[in-house]
Length: 150
Image 1 (cartoon, helix red, strand yellow):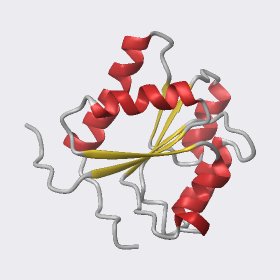
Image 2 (cartoon, helix red, strand yellow):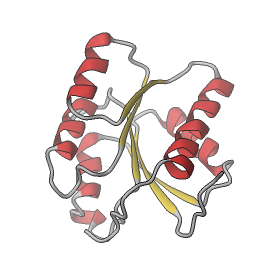
Image 3 (spheres, helix red, strand yellow):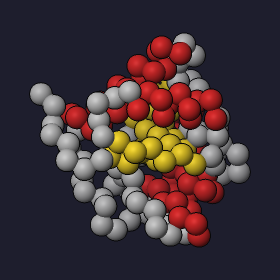
């Protein structure tokens, strides 16, 4: 049974690879959910968005963050740590979506309180299925707090 969705959900995609970002956004467009995806290309921009700084002063708080680990400047683990140590941001679910299968990356991500860790499939159709599954799980099965008023 699907939950009734009233407001659009906002997904913050933190991904430096334009091709992967495009595929993720395409997969989410195909879903039946009313969603908006906002894409940032690096960790510094992500934190500016989340903290409503600079050009992001009017940013809307995301309902879910899809985070790549391998980013230029500030890497995904640093971003995850900042988010989960911030009393205003820590309730936002963070899904690690990365090519890394490293046990060290998996352990470190969960130790930093990632909500889940998913390795990106190489196959196009599998990648699309994974992104749709993420969206379906987080927005039709899970109950999330209303984080819009921060």
